[in-house]
Length: 213
Image 1 (cartoon, helix red, strand yellow):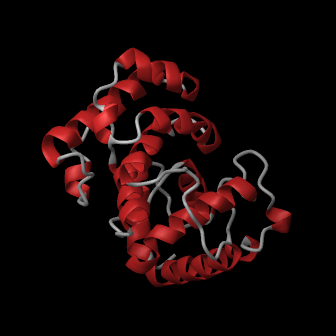
Image 2 (image 1 turned 135 degrees about the vertical axis):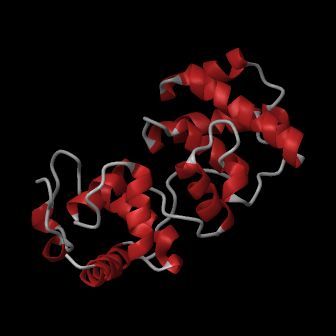
């Protein structure tokens, strides 16, 4: 399919998604960019629901980077254990808190290039913080839902998140980058399930080639 037709498909899909989810928001509960970054680190290979069960206790005890930086590995592990890979996650969020304390005075930097240099912050997490935390469209968040739906909908043939994002950036206007990801994630949760997609009741069905199904 030509790039022009692909852009047309992407535009039609985006229009329908925004009808279904007119005000899509990040499902991770947070108060500020710092808490959002920590919650996103915890969400790796874990559901947002589980993260939202853990973070109230974590943020009650350590609401700021300054307080989290003073915590011990054992203290953090005990709180986040149920999120899986908790030792590495505890190491990452402690490293993140200490880094922004020492390098940015406790404030999360509003720069993708600076964010990705911090412990535990990959491109996906950085895009989440930039888009949801600061309202800056630095890229498209590509999680497991966006990966699956983008392939099924024929918006990419890639499997690697970085390459998928590159394809989506070419197809979508920058003004849609943030909400497109949120809407795709919600659609992936509610309709386009990994194992049993509800194609029969999906209003995007006419636009979707159902690649891989």
